[in-house]
Image (cartoon, rainbow, N blue to C red; front, side):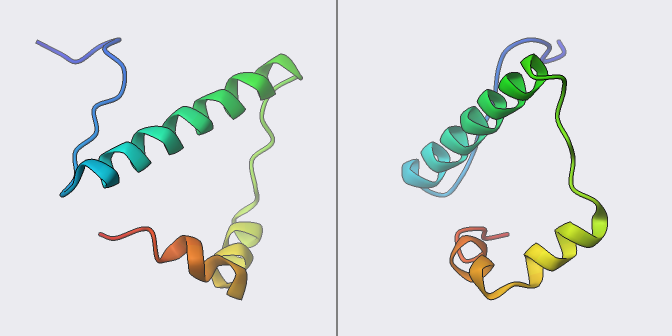
Amino acid sequence: MPADNYGIIAMGPTVESVLRTVLVAEKAATVFVGSTRLGGPLFLAPQQVARLESSSGNVPRASLIKP
Protein backbone atom coordinates (compact mmCIF):
# COMPACT_ATOMS: atom_id res chain seq x y z
CA MET A 1 0.00 0.00 0.00
CA PRO A 2 1.63 3.28 -1.08
CA ALA A 3 1.84 6.17 1.38
CA ASP A 4 -0.11 8.61 -0.80
CA ASN A 5 -1.70 11.61 0.90
CA TYR A 6 -0.99 10.51 4.45
CA GLY A 7 1.04 13.54 5.45
CA ILE A 8 4.55 13.58 6.78
CA ILE A 9 6.27 10.58 8.30
CA ALA A 10 9.20 11.53 10.53
CA MET A 11 11.61 9.31 12.42
CA GLY A 12 14.52 10.11 14.66
CA PRO A 13 16.51 9.05 17.68
CA THR A 14 14.52 11.24 20.09
CA VAL A 15 11.06 12.72 20.35
CA GLU A 16 12.63 16.17 20.27
CA SER A 17 14.43 15.52 16.97
CA VAL A 18 11.24 14.18 15.39
CA LEU A 19 9.28 17.19 16.62
CA ARG A 20 11.93 19.55 15.21
CA THR A 21 11.73 17.76 11.84
CA VAL A 22 7.94 18.00 11.74
CA LEU A 23 7.92 21.68 12.74
CA VAL A 24 10.49 22.57 10.06
CA ALA A 25 8.48 20.66 7.45
CA GLU A 26 5.29 22.42 8.53
CA LYS A 27 6.98 25.83 8.30
CA ALA A 28 8.39 24.98 4.85
CA ALA A 29 4.93 23.93 3.65
CA THR A 30 3.40 27.14 4.99
CA VAL A 31 6.01 29.26 3.21
CA PHE A 32 5.56 27.29 -0.02
CA VAL A 33 1.76 27.62 0.00
CA GLY A 34 2.04 31.32 0.79
CA SER A 35 4.45 31.83 -2.09
CA THR A 36 2.09 30.11 -4.53
CA ARG A 37 -0.57 32.66 -3.61
CA LEU A 38 1.87 35.40 -4.59
CA GLY A 39 2.78 33.97 -7.99
CA GLY A 40 4.92 31.00 -7.06
CA PRO A 41 8.17 30.35 -5.27
CA LEU A 42 11.48 31.79 -6.43
CA PHE A 43 14.20 29.21 -5.86
CA LEU A 44 17.80 30.11 -5.10
CA ALA A 45 20.42 29.59 -7.79
CA PRO A 46 23.07 26.93 -7.01
CA GLN A 47 25.65 29.68 -6.47
CA GLN A 48 23.44 31.33 -3.86
CA VAL A 49 22.94 28.03 -2.05
CA ALA A 50 26.69 27.39 -2.02
CA ARG A 51 27.35 30.86 -0.59
CA LEU A 52 24.79 30.35 2.18
CA GLU A 53 26.14 26.91 3.04
CA SER A 54 29.66 28.26 3.38
CA SER A 55 28.78 31.36 5.40
CA SER A 56 29.66 31.54 9.08
CA GLY A 57 26.04 32.38 9.87
CA ASN A 58 25.08 28.87 8.80
CA VAL A 59 27.16 27.19 11.53
CA PRO A 60 24.39 27.20 14.20
CA ARG A 61 21.82 25.86 11.74
CA ALA A 62 24.20 23.29 10.29
CA SER A 63 24.90 21.93 13.77
CA LEU A 64 21.21 20.98 14.05
CA ILE A 65 21.48 18.68 11.03
CA LYS A 66 22.92 15.36 12.06
CA PRO A 67 23.18 12.63 9.41
